Image (cartoon, rainbow, N blue to C red; front, side, top):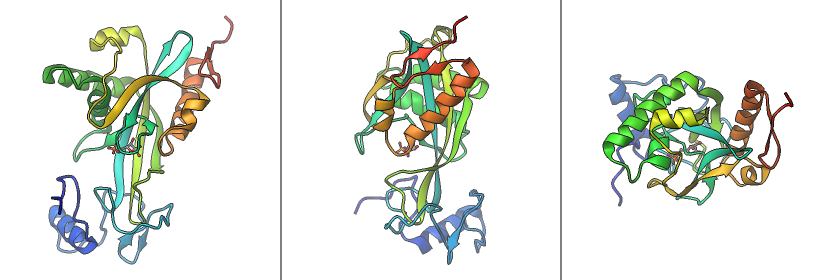
Length: 243
Ligand code: RP5
C-alpha cells in the first residue's frame, strides 16, 4: 500500500477525526471543521453542498470537508487579443488555470504566486530566481490582484464528503510588470503540467477547460472589461471604445 502523503488526512473518517482533534489540541471536536464557515453535516460527517456525487470518503482529496485551492488568472494583451496563462493538467489532460492547494498557514496571495512560479515559470530556473518571482508575484497579487471568485469547484475529485473550493484572482500584466519581475513572459511547464501556454481567451478555448474554470475565467473577463473599459469578443479579440 502507498504511504499516505504528508498533506492528506487518514482515509478512514473516524481516524481522520481523531487526528484532526489531536492537531487542534481538543479531546472532542464539536465542530469537526473549524476552518470551514458553513459546513453541512450528515450525522457527524461533512456533506458536499452540491452532492451527491456517488463517491464516499475523501477519495483523491487530502481532507474531509472543503479542500482549499487558489487560482491565479494572469492576463496580457498581445497583438490585439486577450491571452491568459493556461496549463495542461497531467492528471486529466485538460487545459486549466494554473491553480493549486493552499498550504497550511499560507496566504492566498502566496499560493497564487507559488503555483504560478512552479507550474508555469520556474522549472529550469535557479531556486533563487524562483524565490524572487514568488515574492514579487505575491506582492503584485496583493497590490493589483482582483478577486474574481470564491467558492465551490466542480472538480472530478469531489466526493460526498470532500470537495474543492477556490479563491481566484486576476492580474493584467503589461511590459512594465515583466521588467519589474525580470521575466520575458516565456513559459515553462512545471511537474504537474504536461504543457503551458498563453491561451487566447476565446469561447472555443474556454469551453474545453477543466472543471468550472470557464465560468471563473468568464467572471474575470467581465470584471476586466468593466475596469479597463473594453470589450473582449468571442474569438478573444479586444475591442477598445473609439477615442
Ligand atoms: C482545481 O484544481 C482548482 O480550481 C485548482 O485549479 C486545482 C487544485 O488542484 P491541484 O492542481 O493542486 O491538483 O479544481
